[in-house]
Length: 323
Image (cartoon, rainbow, N blue to C red; front, side):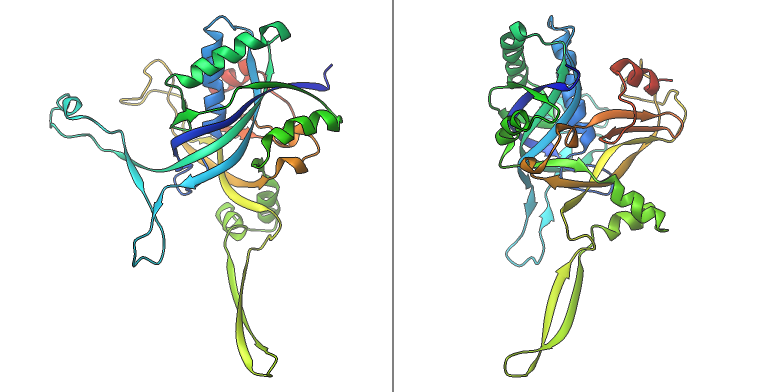
């Protein structure tokens, strides 16, 4: 039975105005921390509604449609990112501030998405599936957010069981994910480049930049012409930068005006690596697309990862955060 994964599919969740500023220097598909955080929030809401045994242990994210909010004027050569201002205040809310003006705002790039989430779960029996399905639909229809965006619509949740090595089980699930692209981790490309002597930023850019090259060739009339070609270093796969977690910079403590006064504070920076969008029909094992929380206390790393030696329980992860 250990070879069987119990999976819950939340199909075609349409999210409006999600946060596309995935890290301080990348704009695009929302960070993996946003998706695992949304699923963890969903689990905690279910736990408070009588489903105390439910745990979502890993998550797969499949993008069906992604629309970055950009603008291009009639005489513009390139698109510009449409920046939203957060937080926004009404005139009545502005009276709360002594100056009568809104405090410093954070600019955010936004996007509209159509995604499916596959959740590996424990704690849901066959007889409870109908009740859990109704509660999840109620929560998603309420004011729950995903990646900072509003949920507009979604299709009914579905339950699957996938046995390792059973292609019939796997195909039954992946058919529901098509057409779409599952986001997988390609940390191996970064590791390979850094082992060759590049620093982290050079390794990231080297796999993403597009190299334009021209050469002179002779046409049918034996006249010389210039032909331009464009390609990336790694032409195989749809490689993108993704934010996968945080690196703690300071010890746990208190900070002035911290958001939650009851939770220890720590300054941190984003961890950005490489990912690849891959069509679900090409995967051989469901673990290829599942992401889990991973902590590395020695190096102060708090990550969402696919490659990990030991799968941690929720309690172990929480203990590591506040150790």
